[in-house]
Amino acid sequence: MEVATESPHGCGNSSDTEEDRDSDTDFGPSKLGTKEYWEATYQNELETFKDVGDVGEIWFGEESMTRVLRWMDKTTIPENSAILDIGTGNGAFLVELAKHGYKNLTGIDYSPASVELARNVLQAEDLTDVTVKEMDFLNCQGELKDFDVCIDKGTFDAISLNPENAKEGKKLYVQAVKDALKDRGFFAITSCNWTKGQLLNRFSEGFEFVQELPTPSFQFGGKTGSSVAALIFKRVL
Image (cartoon, rainbow, N blue to C red):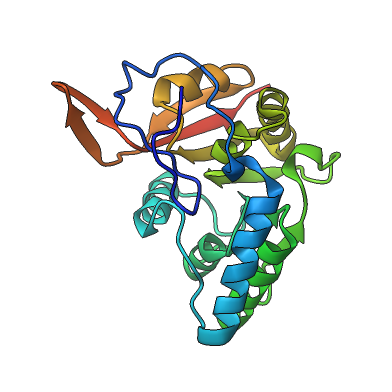
């Protein structure tokens, strides 16, 4: 399955409906799956932030953060829950989580420029208690564990586009989420490349599907589909 278009932050939306995209077929390789691309992207955003204070693009838009925060409210996730933001980028979601009252926050990214940018953004908001680490989620070697909630907005998408090892990367990603979460911990994933059916298939072992979060839908060829999938899973042993 080929990605139809590419935005600067990795969202390759297609006009295919979920029924048409129900197999777990790999995408074609893309620069959006490389560390070099993201390091260059966040280096530019870091320089822009230092110059004019602009934090850069919010991956999937602010609504993507709002829908997860709304779910957390309804689920009554405690404010002291250990929360991991996988692929934190500019740290914008960490800022929103902190402003929402969450106190035990960690963000990781394999891009040094991303980590520096996120730290700068958090410092500008006077949020000094948030942890941001430079770390490759696929090779964290047990450093990440005992989280109550793990959140991903687009990182799994990027891993799926890696020109060199996407197939192995996806397997490592699933295992890394399992290792990072406590038993019965929650995993919230937002994807613009994978459908609900594909994500259910990918996270079928070691996870229990909880719910799908509402996202904008469209009609194409008489069928209804969605350009973004947002799902909640629960880690089960």
